Amino acid sequence: MRVLTLLSFLLMTACTSLPEPIPDSIPAQQQIYTRSQADCVDLLTDFKRTVQQQGVQDAQLTWDPRFPHLAFDRFSLSWLFELTDRESKRQWLDYVSHQAAVQRQAEYQNLPDNTAYGLKPLDLCAEQLVGRSLYQPALWSALITEPPQLPSGYATWQRVLGLYPVTQHFARPSMDKEKRRLISHFIQPVEGYAIRYAPDDRPSLNRLQIQAWFRQARERSALSWPLLSAEQQQSLLSFYAPVFQVETRSRDDFPGQVRYVTPSQPGVVPQKPTLYTHVSYTRFYGQTLMQLNYTLWFANRTARSGVDPYAGQFDGVLLRLTLDADGQPYILDSIHHCGCYHMVFALSPALTFAPPGNKAEWPVTLQVYAGHQTDKLGVTLSSGEHMVKDVQWLRHDVRARVLTVLPYDQLRSLPAATSHNKSLFNSQAMLPASVRAERFYLWPLGVKSPGTQRQLGHHATAFIGKRHFDEPFLLETLFKQP
Image (cartoon, rainbow, N blue to C red; front, side, top):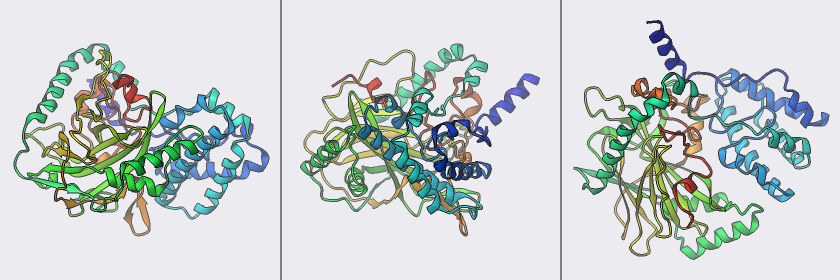
């Protein structure tokens, strides 16, 4: 009984452990920054300490108190040991400081009481620190010798208590069976009534224009990153946005807009079909590739039976379109916002999947090649579960209901009450309203709160082995070198 009580307590607290408190004194700051920078360092650190104390810390990016003007993701940290000259360091600083600015704005808006701070002074201080960082050897030394640590989507204690070396072998047949079920969907026709959705503002781009954008961006970049302007990124997001076809049997199958329906309760409003977008980057055999990300949110994942441990509030489906070096569709992959059901589609005949490994759970892999020139993908989602059950190139325009397009970053700061905002996710990057019963029996495999919808940067995609959706070299593990 005591063991069961302990396990129940650990399961309840596994996803509610708070980030480590920011200490009152941070000796590393004194070693990195000059006295003239101390006021700005203290202001930014004190702001973050208040953010943490008020429980509104944004978890999408990693913040390190040694570098209060910067914020990191897996992609940026993968470059630390390759920043060999001033221009490459400058570009990297621009990237991580911009991330910090976006995070800081969201946290400032979410503070229940932000009267002690002004966003403009905070941003000015960050800009001053960024401008000096390029010429501070102590900062680069600290980054290299002890890089910022990214949180894992896995809990080691769960695997230890759950006897993972044994339980993984019992779990593997079920995982393989589920993969076969998902693949079988791709030979089944659309069931019942289906509704198509797509943005209505597709720009008139062509391949030569897109190729020119990417060539110019690489030439301007010290690291050969395809960093396009905000306007160019938005044009690409609109141009390549898939047409979504959703099998529709209930209100749970209407994609909607995420809002706080009460000051404490978020929900999905189906009257406002919405597509949330963002841009990310990945590394693929010596190249940095741009990724266009598209998320649909549904109010619920429908129960398939009276007791369905996978059903519950909220169901987010994320599709990620990786473009090749010329900005053409290359790879499509998809997960649900719990990190589950990873599917990978090769869109080019130049790509060959690597042999599946035995140590880590392998995603569903399929090939979808265009029969002739076309740039529009059609993606079909099943009813209830919202599984990807078909991906094809569309040969002609189709009629579709209009999707409002919003930036994914809006989910980090949503209006919740008069003059007050809240993130959709808590400071552990989880959406508490979406917790699933499956966590009670999948916990030995180590994934934190299986089934719970979570924020970008925290999607563990394998129950057997370890894999995160945003790993910078993920695609290299799945494909042979072209």
